[in-house]
Length: 138
Ligand SMILES: [Cu+2]
Image (cartoon, rainbow, N blue to C red; front, side, top):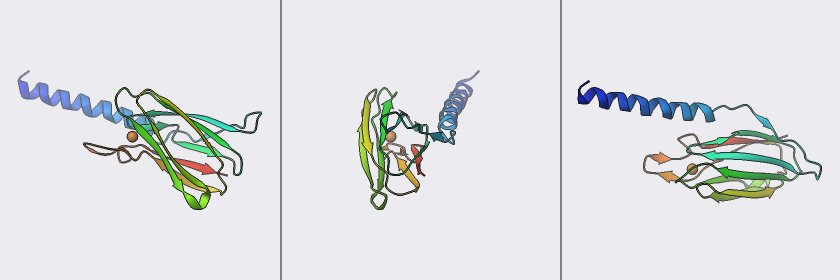
């Protein structure tokens, strides 16, 4: 193998691993958040570069939702933005690499709302790379 072939091979490997990471995060099954005994809808969301998992969560209207963001990244910090004031949603939470963050809110209007990471890296926004999802309020 000459040097350019090695280089080409490396690029192919990098592209395919990236593709796998994107494939895992995109279009995961909608997650119906269960109601716990104390009336709170609890869900853990894995935060990785660059995905949320699950990336489509379904909750009931007018009942408290408790989300724990669990970062599994080693270097890159992310955030969680869900800013739909007319639906009673105004959330912006940062989560450092390897850290957890828990917060609660009460969705007051049914609908489908997009959340995303608002960080920008050298090669574009995290949202464009796949860090977005849907909160569905029923
Ligand atoms: Cu991010």
